[in-house]
Length: 528
Image (cartoon, rainbow, N blue to C red; front, side, top):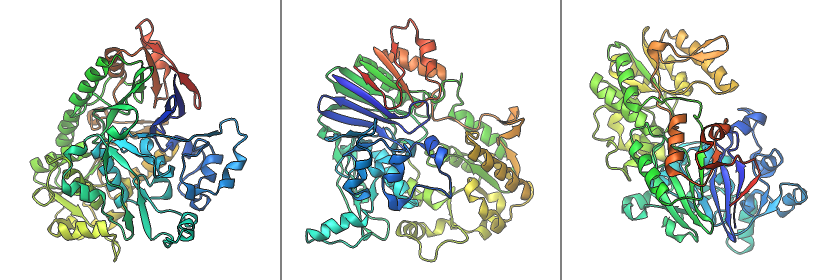
């Protein structure tokens, strides 16, 4: 008997946590950060207390009450006494691993709380992006996906066993099992086991997915972040396919097409399918983004700022091509440079920063005097690529700055000339906090008299893009018709929607299709 229990991703976008149980074998399908649930209780200045370990998250319903799967250093044994009589409490042991679909935190972030001996199965690209993002980020305690700093209680246990390690002096790396380990170079393996912060790293060598007790198939798919995949799991009830996030209209839509064919050949018992954009009839392809952005930028005479989603490497490459054609330098932040350098270890077609004349790296005006080792290495290795605010300000027609709203505090140092252009190549606001940020963004641009292209404007409570400025964002998610095509061509016996605010879409559109649509409830179990 196979059971699927849904601890997240139900009537919400992201936060996927699906427990698959096949008798004694157990796998989680993603273990994501539930952003929408967090916003119900927390904001920038009100956060879960790191010193409370798991307590805040368990009490507020942001983590499932599953004793046995979380790090021992995040709570003493008596933490669980208050939950053992709760309706949703369960002791869960013997978890074989996490099938990670991609490196976005709404699918990966809460891996931070899991025991380090629970392996994470992923593509090598997903593993490396997750490490690069953590290396170069703030790495708060609730998003430490690849490695973590044990709390003092765990170090004390080591001291009692005669192996004391001072609290915070060493990070522990999780065990990642990658689908394409044979393709890794020695340089790539060395990157994985190297610390890029001030602390030492107790590293775990990469291994392959064949170590799992369940038979797995990894299907690369196209999404807005490289390395995304769908998973096939062979169970005693038949194959189960988990889509992760995917699209057909991106630059690598051929990957998703291949997944559809291979998944259909398995004749799956169940397909767990995302539904982020079920209400959209069409999507903008990346080629159209290129055409529209080039049209906006080619006649610009002053500074150009391009705002697009972080870690969307395809979008970065789109603007790099535009920079080449307009004879400007695409000026990226050090985090972007570190990510490109990391990805080049796996994908040689990624531009070489050292050789690409149309790439530069922007150094923040108030950069730390003692930068982290990853940042110091970027500045040293690419010293001839580094530009400062004064360089950009002096030759504004030479640059396309890759800035988002969070980087606009550099503008007082740059002093963009009136008529400079802000090209918005991302999605509209989806909640009240993002709406407030958009209003601030408009005020910043008005303060410096920047022209706006593609930026949503508020009209009667709705955010709209002018008709002649549309087509600047290719979503990472398939539209409704494409999702229906995916479902019909894979043709599972059962379809289970996740990662969607409108799962009834599948019921309404797949009636009499031969596919039984089952809508799960949060914390509910579907038995196959």
